[in-house]
Image 1 (tube, rainbow, N blue to C red):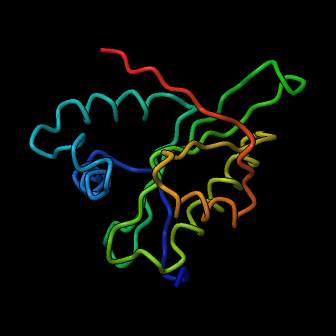
Image 2: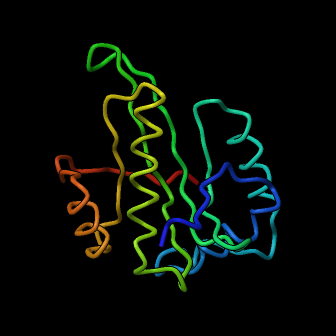
Amino acid sequence: MTADLTIRRATTADLPAIITMLADDQLGTNRESVDDMTPYEQAFAAIDADPNQLLVVAERKDELVGTLQLTIIPGLSRRGSCRGLIEAVRVAAPARGSGLGTTLIRWAIEESRHRGATLVQLTSDKTRTEAHRFYTNLGFENSHEGFKLKLT
């Protein structure tokens, strides 16, 4: 199912579809909205201007079916190595279960390697048990406990 798939850098024209995918989710439904695109456009401009950020979409037959953001983080630990951080992975509802998520994550791993990263990491909400199984099946280890602090 991936022969007709293109993974490419997102453009501002892709924002409505990306936000729709972010909102079509048990957690995103209450925190995302396409009613006002201004904050998303501002965030996109910052992401797009940063060479260590890559927001991508997966496109099939002129339809956006997936997205993720990859951040390359330079660091001093691990002998000065970089790490890839995968965030906001979403697959459009009609494409779920097709292997697209696996394709996106494997793409992000290879892109991280290509950009010099020696480690790839991600976080997943504790309530997303199916996602945890998915990431474990792809070889990720649940090695750390994550912490977040909401800033208002």
